Image (cartoon, rainbow, N blue to C red):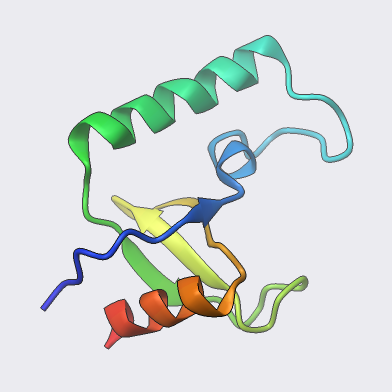
Length: 90
C-alpha cells in the first residue's frame, strides 16, 4: 500500500534543468522552469516513486524520486526522510 507520508525532495533544480552547468548561477529561464515544475507538483500532488540509486557518486545510499519516470530529485539525506522513503519502498 502506498504511503501518504510527505518526503522532502532536494536537487529539483538540477533534475528539472539537466543541461545546467554545475557551479554556475541558474538563469532566469531555469529558475522559472523549476518554479513551473514545482507549481505543477504542488497542484497535482502526484504520487511519486522512490528507488535506491546505488550508483550515485555522492551518496551510496541515495534514494532517487521519480514522477512519470522522470527524475525530479532525491530524498533529503536525513535518517528521518530516508526512513520514510524505505517504508514507501516496502
